[in-house]
Amino acid sequence: MKRKNYDTVTEAVADLKKLGYTIDFSILTEKECLICHSTATELSPEDFEIDQFYRFEGESDPGDQMIVYAISSNKNNVKGVVVNAYGIYADNESSAIVKKLNTNPIQ
Image 1 (tube, helix red, strand yellow):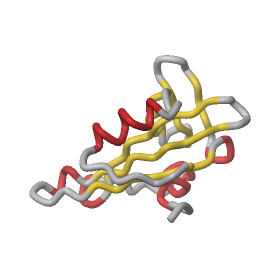
Image 2: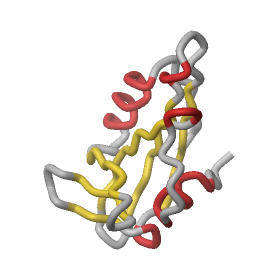
Image 3: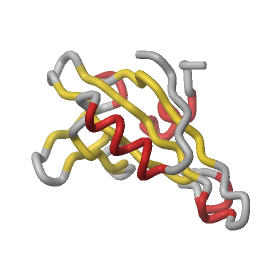
Image 4: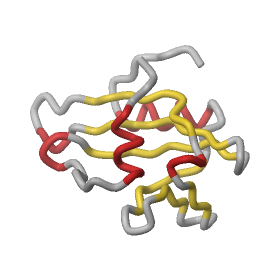
């Protein structure tokens, strides 16, 4: 997938949905997985790959520091989006799922 530049998190998520990343995932640190609450799909760290990520700097508000991840799972045949904070509001727990997301292998 060709890397694009986005001005906002909303713009990135909307475009990724057009590209087939239609599932909204959240981090569930207690179970060390990603979860889609509407479909009950759970992905452990070994079940998905990070296809792209987009980092947004909060120039005027540190609370606006976010990363949007485009993820896919061949095992579960799904593509989705994870939005996570970084900086002072980041989830700094040492769970396997947070570690995988923070690895950011795509440059």
